[in-house]
Amino acid sequence: MAGKSSEDYWNTSSSASFNFDDDTEVEKAFSNSCEIFDSTASDSVFGSNIEENNAQTMLPMHSLVTKRNLDTVLDDVRIPTHSSVPLVQETITKMFLGMPYTLYVYRSLDQKLELLDEAVATEDGNIILTVLLYLKKTLKLTVLYHNLLKRKIALEHYTNYLMRELKLEELADFYMVTGNYSDIVYLFYLGCRGTVSTESMHVKLLRFLAEHQSKLDHDKNVMFTDYKNFLKWQMDSKMTTNSVVEQLALLYKSEAEKKSDNKSIMAFKQTFKISDFQYEWIQLNVLGVLKQWKKITELFIKPNWLTKKNSIKTVIDVELFISTLYKHNPPKEIVEEFLSCVVDSDISIGLAKKMKCHKFVIDAYIAQRDRLSILNYKNNIPNQSEEYFYAENALRSTDKKWKN
Image (tube, rainbow, N blue to C red; front, side, top):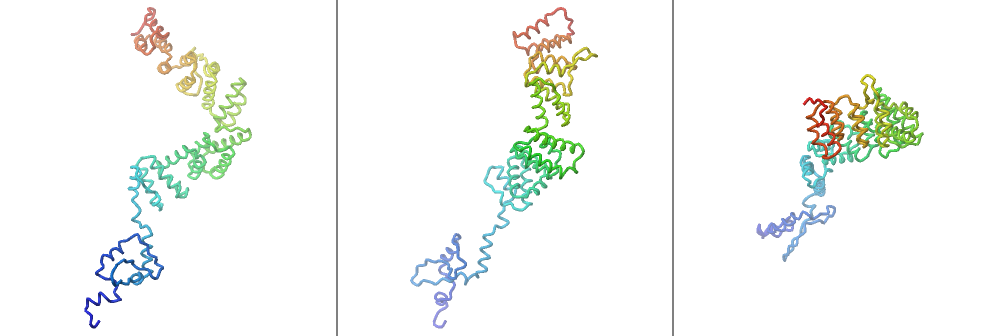
């Protein structure tokens, strides 16, 4: 260092790491975050375009930071940190507002369940279903099913989705895995089979009974066994209907069109333990579709020797029976014949008003000597119609003793 000033030494020494007069170039080198350094190259340097008469030699990166430490820094940059995962509430809010979002940053089971709980809290079906489909895609189904059992609302959305999309085999598997024997009735007994073949459903039901029969109570055990037998009967008979009731309707329609006896139908009813309600419901609707009104009255209207008045003989609620009959557009006199069999006049008059059986209503009020009710009801009858004149004639009659 002899003969040189301290300032000369720092400005000319070949061992100097940086020239402090070139601060701007140093800042430029470190601020260029997009530049990629090859950590394996032994001659990596900070680039510099300093145009000076005496170019300065730049030191290799490895002389400043060891390769091992540099790799550690770069690895840390490449690995997402926990802080890069947004809060679940923030993501759900974005979904609610229609903003861009991603669910794939939530990888742990706890995060996914929190996501589901927050989605349910929004009471938004689209958000709930979106989260459910993400969980379905990223979790084992047994894990998903186990956690859905603890979340009734989410479970309902999931099963409704499977029904709506006709993913019925998937729904059957869900019910089997979770032991939801009450709901599985909907699939197996009521016949919501969609495109699933009879053979496939029969095999699935056999497997279900083999695994779960011991857990079923007596009634459900009998029910599933009967349905298994029905599927076997379908395969043997080469029938493709979805349910016992639908099959009975098909048989009854065939017999009614041929006007043959009902022996085969009664045998079917007994074999598959079809209730009287189901049987009579099918009779009413099939005959209604075929417009066989006389047959309907013969089956369901019987004389009552005690009251000297006809009555409706059915296990179906009378109001439901007449309302269902009316939906098949029978002649008005057929409807009135059934209305006249109803014991409760309030019920019969109420039904007659809904079905616009105006003459029946007028006659009922005449029987009650209720002139005021006829006067009021006349406003509901089309002017100049036959029923309108019928009401006016009743009001002008002098041989009736009115109570009002």
